[in-house]
Length: 420
Image (spheres, rainbow, N blue to C red):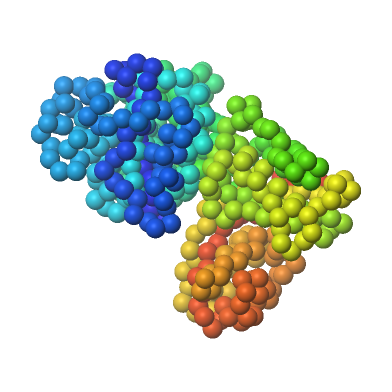
């Protein structure tokens, strides 16, 4: 299982009033490819909706918490009065996230808070939402894999899932309301998990549950990342971007507050332009690094005027262009020992493939299998795209990762997807 790089603990603190504060934990990201300005704390602060605070500046919600803070020593000592610190310390000790951030709120607007958080929840973030003592906890593992051992330490009652399943309205707890807004807007799937299940999560339609059961929200599978209406809106944004850039050199203005929550989710995407059935430009991100609507705008611009393989799109071509958007799942390393095992593990029509040979990297979207259905030919052409020789995938044991896409185009086929 791929472990999350960041842990975000969301909890209420009535003593804060209307304030929303961000507290950076003792864990620090050590990966060279993640500079400080890209950490979760910085991302939240850049949005302007939060203020930074040191743990000593956050009032404890109970006298016991204050006593714990005074008694505990070591790097976790200053944080001992903050909610979820014991779960965070346990996860850190067992190879969990490499950076930690608290978002602590007084009496928030749940809908507004959900929209703000949606822009910072990358596929590598584990969100732990802690509700008022005596109610429930709800946890999210966005990468779609649940580890029973982790969830047993971050267990949750099922009240938020029940609220999602029924039409009676939102729960009263502000953190639960925020999580429900996120789950509805981002199309998370609610699962029922019981600590007695050592193997993981059992899916269920939950209406009531005993205290030992837990609510876990998962990122939706390919095919459910966006609704048909949201797909149409994404294509509309891509079309607006291409036309504006080609005619004026600038991207159009977009008001994110008017967009559905799913378009604020941090996701990777590609934008592909074709003309008369021939490729006219294709640019994208392999890793989620910005809200989906921004990624669509940026990649639509790049596909139209920055793809080095083609001349920039001319205004006279706009009416003849067909736009396709592919929303990517997080890429995962594909383990193999021999070239034959690599061929066996590839899934034509399902997997997008990333090939890394030395310092060179190239990818083919799953749609490329339509033109290159033979696995060996597919990999040969991918080697060429990476600047290597055909057959180097046999000789050099390159690193290979795969991903899936939810793809849809302007031809009206909004149900297309490429995934497992």
